[in-house]
Length: 272
Image (cartoon, rainbow, N blue to C red):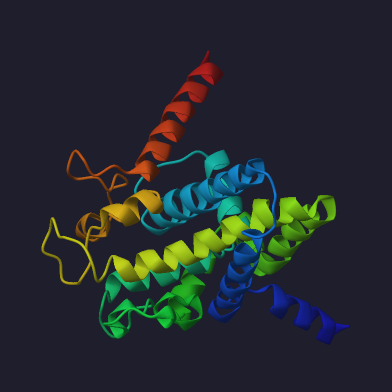
């Protein structure tokens, strides 16, 4: 029984290799979905899922809130960010934050968790999340555990169990819910995030002279919720708005603006 529990815990724990397998698996399903012959309504669902998983979960929640603490959010928003990221297979906030902070510490150098600097020429391996590195130290990991609340610790321990429960529930209801409410938007989230990690360190322009190859790429910003303004972000990582020029449109910043306005309004109603 103890060995079974250990096996289950090991299966539910997050890892880069598992994330890479999900990226490949959902990518294949997304290609298959192109030939499914479903109505356009299901593709709208996929776009909504991409907005929730990548826009709210990845860009706003995991990147700007959990990793950089660039803005304050109410508890309900933190829970929303977490579940959007988990359902989108981005990872648990605890480990994603540690990996991303390593990227900023060693950007485009040895020790960078991402591998853009190792691929001067674009090829498929540049986009494989399975090649990323969990290179944070045990000391940083244990410190992150001590600082995390019970909710985040449970998410970390049961990560793939939560993902599987959500995906299988959609499959039990309707295969199209599974395909267009989970698989396709997850594929978009993971493949676009890896494309962003590569493209914004190779192509584009710089507003700031940083100690790395981070660049601004307008089409990546449009496709991935403002994340393409990467040089702006690396120059000022504590800013939740990545836009520095008037025409650098940041959709993620707009989401944060709405959350902050809604939070202020809700707080005012409670006081009244």
